[in-house]
Image (cartoon, rainbow, N blue to C red; front, side, top):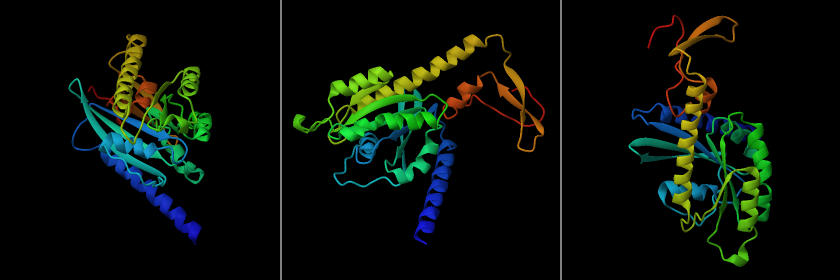
Length: 262
């Protein structure tokens, strides 16, 4: 009975998260860009605290482990553009992996978090990277973040140089932060937003340059589950680009039936 209760609770949790995400994406107020950022890493490294410090500017000294996933939204405005960050905080415990893996697929950016006073949490980063790579084909942006940089130097188990060398070897961004006193939190998220915007614009420009001969619209035939063909109306955007940034722009418009000029 206990296992059945746990299974039901997991299913209810997933259903609520999907429903919440749906209504958040289709809310009344329109955002210019919506980016999904997912935090991964071992338990107790401070993923939740980093998110809470940025969104609510709070820090809780008590450790409350994340159950499955936690979700918060931060809205910012840059150059008169409204940007919504969907921040997904995943549990570090193995028993929740089956839940959290599904949320890597639609992420625009993954933040791998370790604690500078916990060498195992840093050594495990590569296994987290491997897991994300195995569960997504969208090539999200990777960041490496060392938390608890406010600690005294004699408590540090992972040197800045070691982490920086790893990040350079993997060609990913690296920063040390402190969720406790707020060190580098704003800097990190501002840099994340800028990189997401630059990446999106770069992908869009690449598509336009490679497909300048296309008309404004094109038609493709897709097979549905019943093997009956349906026509879809797709505007001038590349499908991989649309797939990666489906939360950011209305670039993929599909309509069943006859094609009409939009």
